[in-house]
Length: 537
Image 1: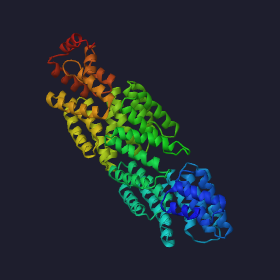
Image 2 (image 1 turned 30 degrees about the vertical axis):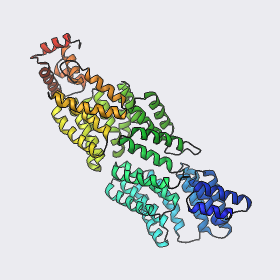
Image 3 (image 1 turned 90 degrees about the horizontal axis):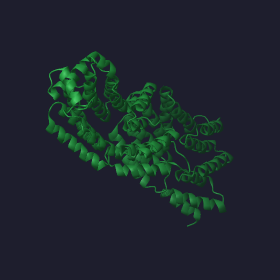
Image 4 (image 1 turned 180 degrees about the vertical axis):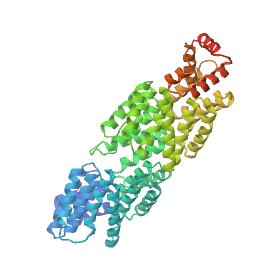
């Protein structure tokens, strides 16, 4: 076989690195023809050699013009522009799309002209104009079908699905995404666009917390990437998605390895826009394992790479005992975030932090909003999150019976999602609620079960918190009840305690009643005496 024939064989086998090297070698001795120049550009792109791919496609563009084939010239210009667009080089991408439109002047109706409009529609959709984008995508489907352009049809349906999700019609949107993936997994779409479709669909499923689809398509993306060992552009994205899902499933060691690999993969030679997400996921795992200095560095790297570090960095501050800092960050982040799915990613941390800061009224408001978003999106993950938040707030309000009802729902939901860490956190709260209701045996069972899970995962901060619970003051008082007792012993009225702790008077009265019952005292004077005798004030 000649070098060119070897290159074509490697290209057919999707060995992109080998194909690029052999095409380049052949080109050095005898200039490649138009077909092979286009193959060289695609092989270089998929091997992560962006400058080389741009150079090859640019030559193919000029060769097509020389041959008097403007439509083919436009396709090469669009290939360059789309690659740049997904690397965040939007200005240069726009220039190549404009060149494609210029060379198509006088060509009449053709699929190539729709390609420039479709990529512009993606930019408009991501920029907050899904209505305009949806009309263009509809045209793309019609024109793609008329001219037999499967790639154009696929990307246009992908855009339609993402537009439906963006405007809140999630059910219709995910059906369109499934249709896209049928064609992609059947091999009906070119490799470059198949990778873009995989990553966009998984991101869309994650956006609406559709874990079932996210897991299925991430597994498919993993198989697709593994079948192409030299593939670079989408492997890092694949690793980020796998890391998120492995973390939820409790495979923290594997998730940590995937996160580190993703960071390395996405860092060079081209810095991809998902690098920030890779660092953020690494920071999340480090925070959960108690590696606080490393987590802070990862969150800062995520921020430097364009991924906001909230809520992870705020939860790190909370774990460090810097409650005021965490509360300030999350209040600001929640106030400036408008889209419900994005708010739902912040609200669980907001609720947890407001409880720690003693602002139970704000925590209740956050939990109720989260429940409303979960109801609207109808996502099992969000329903589990909302039930956990509801139970945590009820516990802070001094209502363990209501807390137990919500927490039982949350525990069942997390188990159904195969999420051991979240299940264990709920078990701790169930244990606390049972303890406050006087059921010490069930309390010990739940907290003991949670401790085993935390130990298996390596969740050092959670183990430390359980050790702190074991050293709780005599009488089995909760942290909130100790706060109330101290203020009561200082001579404050229920109204004054409510004002200081951000609670309602009814909630304070419940805390006082629970405290009297647990301590076996009949009056405020007796409770004050208990507080002095046990060193609580």
